[in-house]
Amino acid sequence: MTLVVQKYGGTSVGSAERIKAVAQRLIARKTNGDQLVVVVSAMGDTTDDLVELAAQMTDRPEAREMDLLLSTGEIVSSTLLSMALKHEGHPAVALSGAQAGIGTDTRYGRARILKVDPARVHRELDAGNIVIVAGFQGITEEMELTTLGRGGSDTTAVALAAALKARCEIYTDVEGIYTADPRICPDAQKLAEISYEEMLELATWGARVMHNRAVELASLYNVPIYVASSFVEAPGTLIHGGPMMEQSNKVMGIASDTDVARITIRGVPDQPGIAATIFEPLGENAISVDTIVQNASVERLTDMTFTVSRSDLAKAMDLVRPLAEKIGAPEAMADTHLAKVSIVGAGMTSATGYAGRMFKTLFDAGINIELITTSEIRITCLIDEKDIPTAVRALHKAFQVEQAA
Ligand code: ADP
Ligand code: ASP
Ligand code: MG
Image (tube, rainbow, N blue to C red; front, side, top):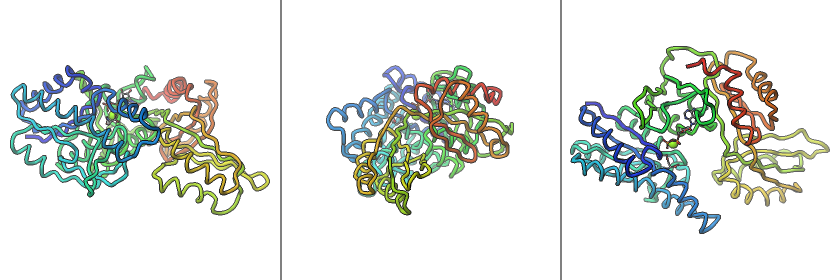
């Protein structure tokens, strides 16, 4: 008997019909002799709808209540799936994240899992149940409910698989991990396998098919993740840490992310300690800053530019405006028309010329680059949001990513 943790995303449980279809898949798998723990996302656009409803009440919802609100989406889908299974005569039980033993820190909206206590899940499995767990949520030591960040149900699944020493399977609305988002790039190819480090870069820089924390956890606990479709029977992608069948020295994938807001502080005095004055308060308020550029100073004044996610922009500007005033900078501005496009590939460490080729490709496509940032295995350009589809397709072609599969 194999213990399997499966996860079904929002589209996969998007309607009563879809939930019943998932129930049938689970029954078939259980009949085959496997033990199942099943993590579900909220149905369809439920989480977006809840965010939107909260916005109608206030533009600054309290983080604690926002998490309590958002955690309800996954409670709905998990209980409905359990009911569907029992209706078909199969013992099942629905558990909230808290009931399933998911313990987190107190960072509302982006809580990290600190520990998983699998005792209850084991008990329910021993009693013969298919155990359905509400994804994306946990509980703090002070018994407050938290959420793990958008897309966080993937992380619930990996954390449970690690704690239960189970197989981990993520079922979604595409057939696996592709060389680019197949909805943007028709040439994108499904990959048979991809390394943790490449998947982590793709996920962190916009490939929302996997939550980046899930990949981080999987790599830490060495849990291979199998990603496949919940709609059709087709081979998926294995994300793992072992040797790759085909060592590729190419670009493995292209990611894009439109959740970018840019903040520019003009006329910053060029003095030691100024950067800390600006960025420490942002860090203390859990706002992550991912691209920072300080222009060369002219007459001891410089411009400081950095990016945050759009959902953090209001909070970031609330902090930045008084800080700018304090350090004597005349102006702090924000804009939200930019987006990131990245090329990722482990082979980039040992080869040269990738950056030049990327810039040339974007230039030839008539796309202006506003900022550039790199890691060992990634190059990212900030460009106009409206240019993203053209950029992804042009880069996919230029790097012949389609041959990587
Ligand atoms: P789920 O609700 O199942 O968690 P998501 O919407 O979070 O699904 O993620 C699946 C989506 O991720 C796909 O529909 C696809 O548009 C998008 N995506 C982005 N990049 C990739 C990629 N490289 N490979 C596959 N899908 C991708
Ligand atoms: N429902 C949450 C979201 O939409 C979590 C998830 O789907 O993984 O972000
Ligand atoms: Mg997702």
